[in-house]
Image 1 (tube, rainbow, N blue to C red):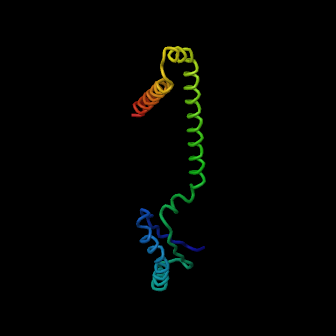
Image 2 (cartoon, rainbow, N blue to C red):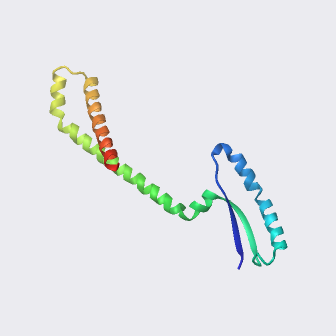
Image 3 (cartoon, rainbow, N blue to C red):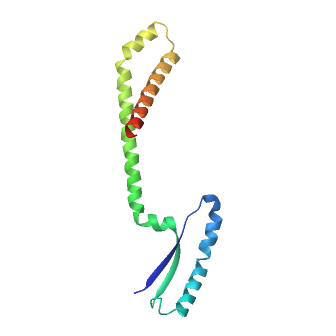
Length: 138
């Protein structure tokens, strides 16, 4: 049975990626040092000792990658469903007010003014919903 030592290196910001690649390139030097240590201290190391270098995020996320993608897909689906529900509610609300809009148009309100009024009302409803949600979370 081979024992395996994994040296984990933290993934840096993309701007520092060249330094990270340099460290991963030195993985072969880690292996050489490990082999020298094995030959010097045979009692302290198992018979078949192996050392590898991998990125820390690769080590952590590797087992959960499929689960994370599934979770992200579920969140996106939930966001789409909630967005369509809100759009449906707003459409129903504005279609129920068609008589009021027709009356305002007959009294001389321009199309731009009517659209602006409906947009501002929708925006205020959305902001009120966001504030209520944030307040409930805190």
